[in-house]
Image (cartoon, rainbow, N blue to C red):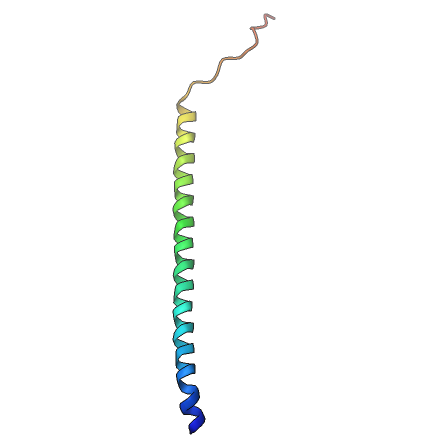
Length: 69
């Protein structure tokens, strides 16, 4: 019984530390995933705007003169 009384505080503190670190790492992982999703959406929106602008522009004129046949 003496061993339990000696080791129990260390085990409890170790478990508290383990749960705290686990929750910190899980929160960091979730934040990274959310940031990646936000950046992907921003890139998609930027690409969509670029595609829309390209579609609305008239074709560029040719640099070569017209060839008569």
